[in-house]
Image 1 (cartoon, rainbow, N blue to C red):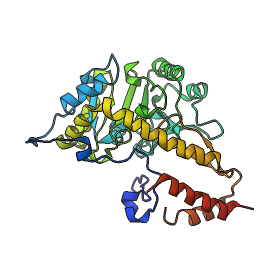
Image 2 (cartoon, rainbow, N blue to C red; image 1 turned 90 degrees about the horizontal axis):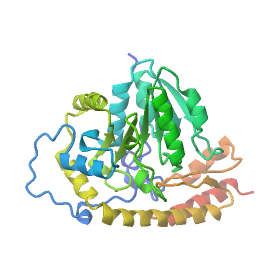
Image 3 (cartoon, helix red, strand yellow; image 1 turned 180 degrees about the horizontal axis):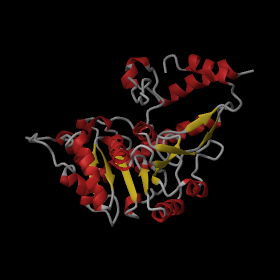
Image 4 (cartoon, rainbow, N blue to C red; image 1 turned 90 degrees about the vertical axis):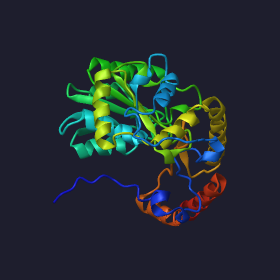
Length: 345
C-alpha cells in the first residue's frame, strides 16, 4: 500500500535530543518564556471543552490588535499557525486544484497541498533576487483555476519583507482573479521597522495567519489563529477545525490571552533582544570573508551562503561543522572555525 508522506523535522532539537546540540543557531523564535516570568495565573480554571472558535476574550484581543476592520468573529484560534495552514489547505483545496506558493517556505505551506493532491506551483524567491517577490511574475502564474496564493512575510526562512505597495498589489491580484491571498504573518510583530498591516484587515480576499510561537516565545502552548472577513469562508474553516480537534486547550488559550494582554510591556523588550541578536550576526557576517548574506527585514532567521562552494565542500563542511550542531557568539565562532578548516586556501 502506498502512503502519502510529508517531510519530518528529524533534525529539530526536540526530535534529535537537546543534548545533541551544543549551540543552537537555527532556532526560529525568540527565547522561550516561563509561566513565572509571564506571571500567568490559572486560579481555579474550569477545564471543559472550550469555545469552538477559541476563547472569546482572546479572539477579541487579537482582533483589537489586528486593525480597524477585523472583529472577534473574524478570528479562528487554531493549534499554532501550522494548524491554521492545515485548516486553510484542507478547506480550500481538492485534488487537481491549482495554487501558487512562495518558495522556499515553511513546509506546511506546500507539503499539505501536495499531500492533498493539489497542483502546487512555486513562486521561487532566490538569494540573487534578495528573496523578494516578483509581483508581475506571480500575477502571470495565477490562472482561473487558482484557489489561493500562499506567501510568508517576513519571509520564512530569510526574514525578507515585501513592501506595503507590493502587499496592495498582491491583494489586487487575488481580488481580480477571484482567489484568496494567504499571508503567513507569524513573524509580523518582529519587523525591524513598522510592521505591515494585517492583510485580512485590508480585504475580504486576504486570509492572515499568525501564532504565539515566534514573537512571544511560547511555542509550547500551541496557539495560533487565522483571520478572514468572509463569514461563509469562516464557517468552512470552523467545520474543518471541529473535525481535527473540536476545540483548543483552555489552558493554552488562557496563557495566550494573558501573554497578549502584556503586549505593550513585552514587545519592546522582545524587539530589543532581537536587535541585539541582529547586531551580533551582522558584525559576524561583515567580518567573515567566506560568507555573504541577504540582510533580513524582520524575524530571527536569515540566509547566508558560501560563494563558489562545491557540493563536496558543503558536505564536508556540514560533517565538520555540525557534528554537535548557549550562546550566539560561541556558536558563530564554531562556524568560523569550520569555514577555515573546509574552505581556506
